[in-house]
Each structure stands twice: as C-alpha cells, then as structure tokens.
Amino acid sequence: MKISSKELSKYDRFYRANLINSLTGFKSVSLIGSISHSKQTNLAIFSNIVHLGADPALVGFINRPLAAAPHTIANIQSTGFFTINHIHSELIDAAHHTSAKYPKEVSEFNAAQLTEEYSETFPAPYVKESRIKYGCTFKEIIPIRMNDTFLVIGEITEIHLNEKIISADGFLRIEEADSLCSLGIDGYYKTEFIKRLPHAKCNS
Image (tube, rainbow, N blue to C red):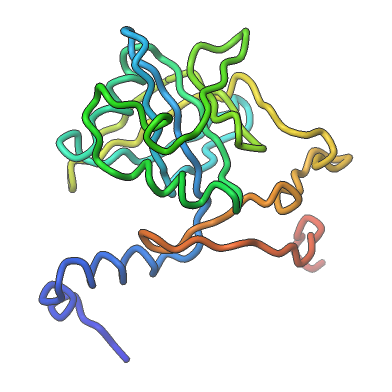
C-alpha cells in the first residue's frame, strides 16, 4: 500500500490525524503540571516530550497552537516552572481525561481526581500518584511557524523516583515503575525490556 500526499489530504481529518500520529511510532507519555500566579493549577497530557541534552539537563515538548491549548504555556511563561510526571497503568483513564478542554478556572487535577503534590524546593505541582517525576525550570520557547506550535524547553532541576530502579551506571529501568508509552492520539501501551548493547565502534 502506498499513500501519496495528495491522497492523504483527501482523507477525513480524524482518520488522517490517527494515521500520521501513529506513523512516528511509540512515544513517551506524561502529565505536565503547572500553576498560575493566582495559584490556579493545570494538568495536561503530552506525548511529545524529548530529551535535548544531559549537560545542562534539558527537555522539550511541543505545545499546540495557543488557541487550542493556552493554559500550560501561559502558566510556564508566567511562573517559569513546570513538572513532568510519568503515567503508569493505574493512571491511564485519569491521565487521558486531562486532555478535555476545561476552562482555565478548572483544575484538571480535580477533574481527573489526581492529587497535587509539592516539593519544598519547587513551586509547580507534581502528580502524587506518579512514580517517576521531575521539575523543570523554563528556559526558552521556539515558535514553529509552519503550524503555529511551540517547542518549550526546560532544564531539569530536581527528580523524584524510587532509587531501586536506578542501575549502577545511572540507567533507569522505567519498566519496573510501569511507565507507559503511547501510540497515536489515544493508544496506551506497556513496555518490555529486551537488552542493552555496548557503545558501537567502527570495525578496525
């Protein structure tokens, strides 16, 4: 089967969205927590969080156009902080519910019946029920003009997890925390460890 861009443009928009969102394969899926200056919390599910570097420890995520998803980016720009919280099997339904378009005065924490948790050293809310979570300080927003989205970049400033999942070399065995991945817009998957390989070198 071969699908041209011309054929793709004729598809029903929901069919096209499912196809293109699935095409890039499995992605990590997490909840991003933020808070406004007026202390209104927000929680939103994201499946496009990417590692950008380890020194400094940078991550990025794509925020949809402001008209479609204004609250997360507004809070981050306003306060300068956000949290990223892994999702496990027991959180799927609640986490997915945060994708609903609630007005800014409604906290998705309450709507999804998830618990706000605060660190003494970090102002943005974590998801208490999450097993791997980290706080980020806002660094930069890069606009993507092709579709009016934004790459939001943050620096990891604190991490919360069970030390039992950290290998001797720092590798995280996140499958032991039941961290999930996603496919497309609404598919959730478990992961299974296969193996680790040594650093690849050219044959001499």
